[in-house]
Image (tube, rainbow over all chains, first blue to last red):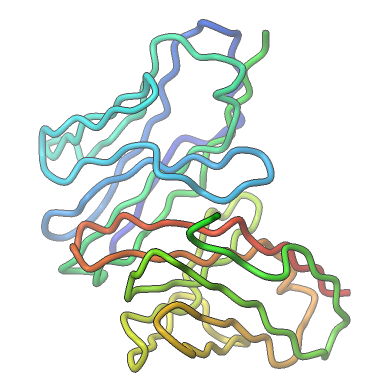
Length: 114
Length: 113
């Protein structure tokens, strides 16, 4: 079945450091790919998404490119801030395979130190 | 006001008790979902509903039941709570565009003693 694998955390960075969180997926067909973010004590919020190969999603300085050849959707940011501290979830939605349900990775906790 | 609300936000109950978690949405979406979040396991789907008359089991439905009272309301019940149902529970909604974007409530933290 469909699945998502993302790098395990926790990840601790200093402010202004570069961030990469790896995410790879297994799916039939052509899934949509997502990054969700969960700030402490809150629900998940959509951070960015990409719906087809080579699309780049971006938001709040974060970017991820849908790479079908490597089945990857790595999250990147050039300069992290303390306010980026959160748990990040990679997810896919495969309308053909999973009827539009989201399949989540296990999450990566990011802590950014001043 | 929040688009997806959940009540209660926190709940402590005892083993064997019946408990209901409620979710309401004002986004006008037909699709609603219940997930549980456990540390290190991500989110796992319990039940989902594509409209009032369509309810489906998810990955981990055993021990849970749901009711879709209206387009805007989707309740999750634990008929006889057990300690390993201690978790953070999220409700979510989505529209029918097939692209999968879901909108989450703030979560209900449940502790079963």
